[in-house]
Image (cartoon, rainbow, N blue to C red; front, side):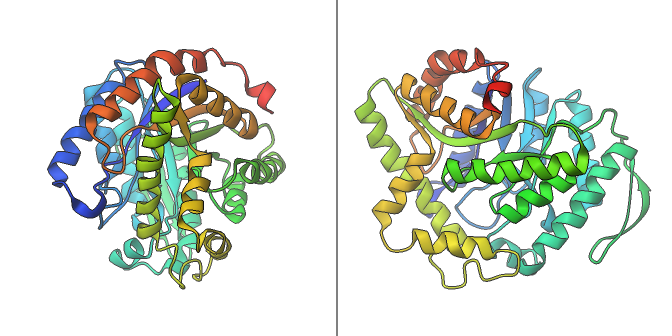
Amino acid sequence: MKVGGAVIFQNPHNVRSDRDVYTEDLRIGDLYEPLGFDSIWSVEHHFDDYTMCPDVLQFLTYFAGRTKTIQLGSMVVVMPWHDPMRVAEQVSVVDHMSNGRMILGLGRGLARIEFEGFRVPLGESRERFIESAEMLLEGLEKGYCEYDGKYIKQPRRDIRPKPFKSFKGRTYAAAVSPESARIMAKLGIGILIIPQKPWEAVAQELGEYRTIYKQVNGGEPLPTIAAGWTFCDKSADRAREMAVKYIGGYWDTALRHYEMASENFGKAKGYEYYEQMAKALKGNTSASIEYFLSLQVWGTPEMCFNKIDEIRQKVGADHYTGVFSYAGMPIEDAEKSLRLFASEVMPELKKLNGAKAEAA
């Protein structure tokens, strides 16, 4: 099994300067390759304290120059907010600069604040995502982009620098709703899971995704990549205390950023699934936090290993990406957790290589 680490730049309630957050989280990012992680990731978000990485490809370009072997993952490029021709060029540049180390992750976005900020109607996101992704993926294989859709009208233009190796087998998309999973199957790309709902439900939807994938593309789909908010400590009690405070704190930032308690959440076209999700979360805040904690990876090294192995088996994952710094956690605690995970959990996870057949 491969193991990655993410950097997300959170500044909840703006209690610190953005400069301090960047300085400390970049320090976490610099640890991943020396500690033996297989990949480094970041996200794309805009306009508030939720996460402050507005350009994940710029982030990956920075780490392409600071590393030698680690893979570089986008979690994710939100396609409706971008000109897909520009994304194709940027992705190709990162891949050239890193000697082909990029893992391309795509998504369609959710937060009203971000869609309004980019003047894109939320209800158009699904169609815009499909058109943009189709053009991008085809372009990266052919070396040029050309598309005539409802939203994307792209005359044929070359991607320069021209992609020098295929992105098939290293392109994923974040999918939460069952409809999105079906779209990804038809596009022929893998699934990146950012946990928001029970792993059992995810496993059930992945079954449908795999069936459609085989029908449309033939052959087996890529193994899943699973992400998770992670805290590792020698003491189970302290791990629980820190998980409640900081993983729970992250969940609070997500609730605020996505406005999950709002009456309008999930009402836009293409987001009907999220309305059901919001109804299940409303009311009891402590129960909501416990629910989110149950999806994540925290505890002693043994507990962390067992949870990741459980996730691996449920969803057929061959890659786990941990988020180690979030919700204003002091850098000393984040680094201590990361180093313990790297020394005692990661070596055992890497022994699980070849478990894909078992998971299936």
